[in-house]
Image (tube, rainbow, N blue to C red):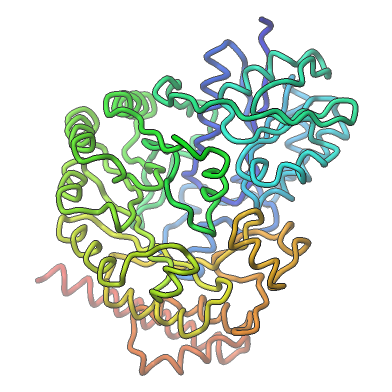
Length: 506
């Protein structure tokens, strides 16, 4: 077997601290077979739009951090495409492998086009967009192959099949391979035992990519996964598509022993002080297995972490086990405060009372709760949005994250938005998911009002309804509305200052 050099790319809008799981894993897999890995990442390069963290700061989503103090800002003097081409010229990779979310697809293709125009190097794309809309991806002139579903085994076979600019095999499972203008669409292979995967490789990342904000502080952190897959079929999420692709056995757990060993390795190797565990629902495990995980983690790792949970899986016993593990925060999606909309449109059938109870259980066990919510969804009315604010005020999570719905094509709710004429595919394709603005044009509520509600959502959540008419003035874009918003922000900071003073002396 001839050793190859693979250029992995990550072109996106995530802020510092995000190390893509797929990239970390593919790097580890390729290196385990002796291949060389080079990485191109645009996190600290200006692509003409704000980073996720910058958007969060602008809408008062989280405690503000000083990104510049740690040099976690984009350098506007850098031409990202020139850097990309120079890296290819310097490294001469045998393969360029790209992965992207749907809202970064157009930007990623722009980079891959200039690579193909200048170098005769095979290019493969993976990730959720390639899986969801493979016909669109393979039609791109710059794409030679794509991966549908999981690609850990397929990438190794594909690398072995490359000879110069030629692809010698077209029968690799999970891959669509284009050769001589013919697309060879291969079936997906059986799912892999994830416990046999190598530990994640973080050595490819810029040191700044380890720095993640949490509660207003910057912490050196890692990104891991303890469960792969989700049993639910929320219509706005790509898991609804993946569950069609893998109808049986897609949800797989790392054994407690295997997971803790990897956490120990990462903590020691990279001197990590924090983790973000990317599980769709960390509490899916049965209670005995979770108790074993809690025991081992507390004994062997004990580094604070954040993760996700579904209201249906939160119990008092599991909350206590989370606390023993040094869990710092759990994100638990509400999505909408209107029960009928949540149940019938979003397919999330927990009651308001259930959500309130599960928030209470987690908080009583000393765990910070981040409530995840969306607004601006198809068929959602203004009253339904304010139902969300009202329920959040009752539930009293530690913080509430409110994002604007983005119509990811290929997902049921994204396709509904197109079908109803709220946005065309041509409008969605180049758009970026922006938690502060909608791209939908719906008859029941205007874009201006949606964006205004989102802009003022912090105030709707934290202040009395008596003040709501005042907040609506800030929907406008004029001198007075901007002055009023600045005044409200200053008054809110003073309120928080006084609140903290009271807490310190009580």
